[in-house]
Image (cartoon, rainbow, N blue to C red; front, side):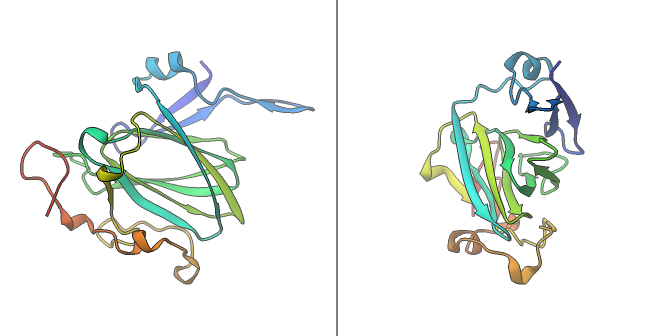
Amino acid sequence: MAFNFIKTQIEGVYIIEPKIFKDSRGYFFESYNEEDFHKNGIKNRFVQDNQSKSSYGVVRGLHCQLGQHSQAKLVRVLSGKVLDVAVDIRFGSPTFGKHVAVVLSDENQRQLFIPRDFLHGFSVLSDTAIFAYKVDNLYNKESEFGIRYDDPTIGVDWKVPTDKILTSAKDRLANKLQDIYYGNTNYGKIK
């Protein structure tokens, strides 16, 4: 197997460490192997790859797509260092509102698998970071949803001083966790 799959305190979220082969020329590793992922219960079919570049202090998130357009993500850092965060917003989950935070970098080459119905975000801890992720559902603007990165109910420590945090206007205006309403088993109703 080319990976070490590490369960987190939230069911379905995995830290994935690739086996890295280093020599005097550099290194090689598999960043994804469908067979290994399937053997470890991750059977998502990834249909889109995304990449972003951000500078120190940027916080992107917390974002997701709702309902039938929800996305599972496999995220990693190509250059630099980020704190990556996944927040459980699954209907009826015992860990609803809880989060996992893990440092991903070009040094540790760790990845994070985030199932559907999770918010996702990251903060940049290095001068710049290039962030890449695979998703298992195509982007749909009408299904976008976000919760403020600084929602005290979630309580993420982004590891960036408050006066150094850079966010988009959209992220500053996003909802709070308490704004999510689950009226029935249909996921994603908003008050």
